[in-house]
Image 1 (cartoon, one colour):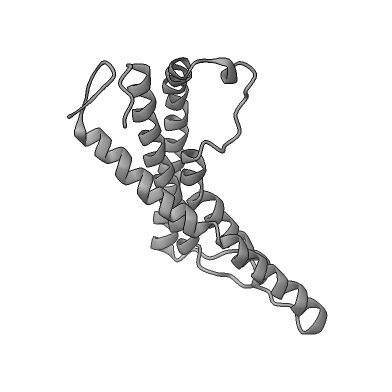
Image 2: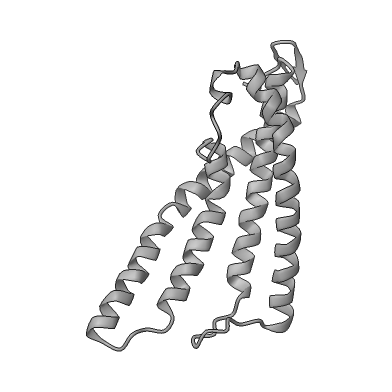
Length: 177
């Protein structure tokens, strides 16, 4: 246990926060280059439409890359606190008040992510069991993109838990180092 402001915070919580934050930071920094992959696919699509026969796979593949980009990057965005927030009152509050409000509001995020994860796992299981493919002419298997989506949702859930622990520690007057 490590001493902070008004008492002790379990070492396990500090370790959890450190590990999840470090992992999501690495994933986020790698995934942010996915936008260049998507741009390359769309550039190829534009060139192939004007100079060659249009490729049937480019638009859908760009959509898959974009889904992975924003879902795998969601945890990193949450970690950086760069998501959208109504700042009308929040910006004027003390760090302790912000933390108390965040502890309450993150519960709604947990509920949302739980149902999103539940539906994602169900959909991924279906895609794996039945070999689900897209309805497009390219007809790719859907399982890979659904697996990436579930991983992204899970990483966001883990990051939200890390933020919850940090906010709870601040609200209790024992911020994590």
